[in-house]
Length: 135
Image (tube, helix red, strand yellow):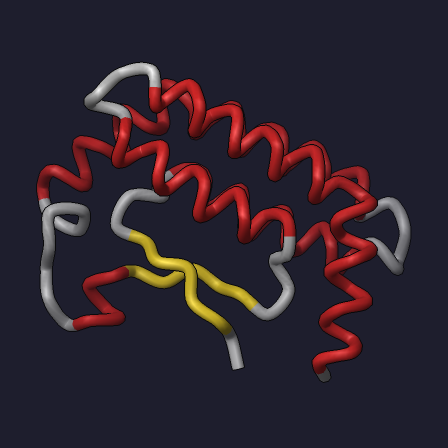
């Protein structure tokens, strides 16, 4: 399984993962410009790293993962996700959906397109999520 995951991650990186990972990191750099955006920037860099190598990783709601509500999974997290969606989320989602449609052209690209759709959903509401290893 590990070898197959590595092969898929390398192919992913070459066929669009690199571009979208850089887009996430660019969004993170733009968030660092303001002090208020620093928590958003941290999430951008974590999700950007996941975007570079998504196979074997998944995102999970922190409340479901830990069983405790925190600032990112409560009301402030919802407000943060709305702000995120309006400023960056919609554009990252469009980028992932565009890459997904390009991947769906071939049968071999279907797993890559599904990963792009997963990341598009994550890009809409990343606050309150945690990247975890999938076993």
